[in-house]
Length: 294
Image (cartoon, rainbow, N blue to C red):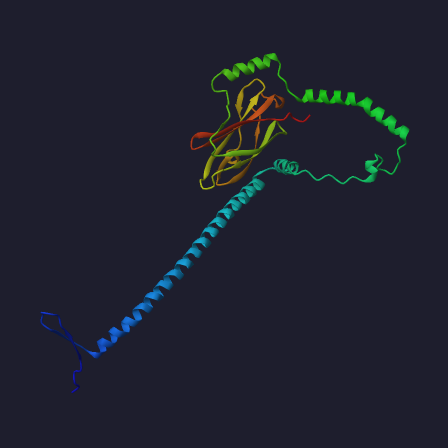
């Protein structure tokens, strides 16, 4: 038989009886090893916690950047989908007007002047002083007639109502339900409004609709009306699919509508754009309508 070898621990206090504890050598070794390993394990735990905390911060920062890129990609996808629906549902004249407005927004750079152009003889012909003086006098003489014709043209384009039309417009504006005051709650913004007369007594309308708060989805529809020369506000009958919107950032609105019955193209003074969302008007503004091309 193996002898039971154990260590005896005597616990002695003053004025108290002695206590004796018997401890095996294995338990004593385990106690010694644990006293050595516990500080090492605690140090390793602190280092691992700090490393994992730094890795967590890096992952959170990466997640925020990915979320930002995802939002930008969603906005870009929404713009491309709006452009795709515009290309599919619009007729060639509306696309031509849209491209024309984009071309007007970025005018071409002027060509550099050549020495021949600076001297007024671009074809290589040298101007004679006498001829130059004659041409200058002829241009001076033609300036009044040109200014007069320009004034007449501007007067023809400007549709100034007579006294009777002004009185009717004032009476209608005072009547309830006809006045259209400007309104903006800041929930939407309308820019780059372009209105032009099309064939068949139709108005072609396009504008940019922007949601200032990308975190909130903006949904609703646009209500379009025209103001006649007599002051009446008449609604336009447009395709409902072209005036509905559900955006988080931006949408290009393009539509067309026939003029109301009894209204000639020359009688249209302004376009009234209203945005309705959740059963209330959040935007209203009037925009001038140019005269139809003759």
